[in-house]
Length: 245
Length: 202
Image 1 (tube, each protein chain N blue to C red):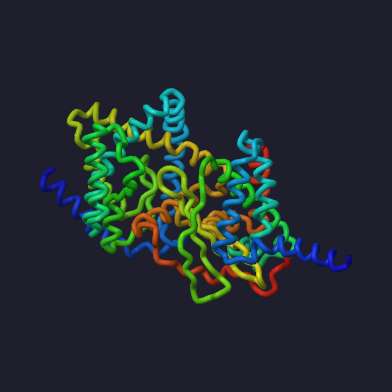
Image 2 (cartoon, chains in turn blue, purple):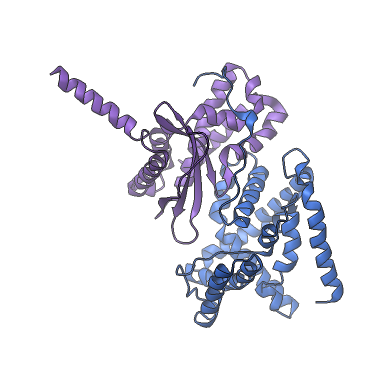
C-alpha cells in the first residue's frame, strides 16, 4: 500500500465525516440523489437480468449443495476473521474473541473450507462500515454503486478497507484474482435467488423497497439488533372522519 | 335448558375472543405459532398450493389486523383527499395485497419456529411493539409487530422485517404512483399487481 493510496483512503473517510450530515434533504429522507440512484439501479437490474441471474441459476443447478456450501464457507471464513477485527475496533472484546475462535477453528480444523464451529459459535458478521457507524459516523446519503449495488456514503468509503480483507486481495495474479472475485459474486448471488424472486414479484417499486430494506438492515447491523426507536410519523394516523371498514 | 344454551353461547364467544384477549405478546406468539404449524402440517400447502395459504391468511390472520389504520398509515396524507368510494376500493385492494405479501413469506416456511423477545412497554398502555425471532438454522430473522388495543382486543396494525416497518416501505413505494396519478393510479396499480400475483402462483 503506497503512501498516496493510504492518503486517498483517509481523505475518503474524512469526506464521509463531513458529508454524512447532508442526508436529510431531498424527497425521501436519506436519498437526496434519488434520480441518479434510480438510473444506476436500472443499469444494475439489467446487468443482473442478463448476466448475474442466469449464471447464478446455472451455478445453483449444476453444483451440488455441499460444493456450494464449501465455497460459501471459504469466503465466510475470511469474513469471520475480518469481523473479529471489527468487533475489537468497536470495543466488543468478548465478541471479537468469539469470532476469532470461530476463524481459528475453521481455518485449522476445517482447513478454511469446513464450518467446524457451526452453530456452536454464532456468526456475527461485522464490516468496517458498521465500525464507522459504531464510532458515530452517520450513514450519509444513500448511493447505488454500479455493479456493487446499494450502499451509503459511509459504507462506500469503508469498502476501501473491506476489500482488502477478502481472499481476492491476497491473490497476486490479476486473472486469478478476477476468477476468485467472480466466484465470490456468483456464490453470493445464488444464495439470494429465492429472496430476489420474491421481491421482484411483490414490489410495487423495487428501487424503493431495496433502498428501504438496505438502509433498515444497515441500521440494525450497526446497533447489533437494537436500534434506537424512531418516532412514528404523526401525519399518517387516521382522522376522525375517515371512512368505516 | 335455557341455561345450557346460554352457557354454550358464552363458551363460543369466549373461544373467539380468547385469542385476542390475552397479553399482546402471548397473543402474537400464539397466532404466529398457529399459522406456522398450519402451514407445516398442511400437505397441499407444502406441495405448493398458494391459494390455500392465501385463504389461511385471510381466515386466521386478517381478523386480527386493524386494516383501516394500516392502510391509512401506508398511504399517508393523500388518504385524506380521497373520496369514501376511493378509500373503500383502496382498502380492498390493499387487503388483498397484504394477504399476497404474507402468503409469499409463508411459502418459505420449512422448519421455522417463533420465539418472543422480552416485551418493552412504552408510555401508552394501549399500544405496544412485540418483537419475535423466526428461528431456523443460521441467523434468526427479526419480525416485530405494532399492536393497538381497542376495548379488550389487541390488533396488529404494522409489522417490521429486519428493521423495516411495512407501512414505511409501502408509503415510499406508493408515493411514486400517487404523485404520478393520485389515488386512482395507486388503486389501478395495486389491482394490477394483485391480478398478476394471483395468476402467477396459484
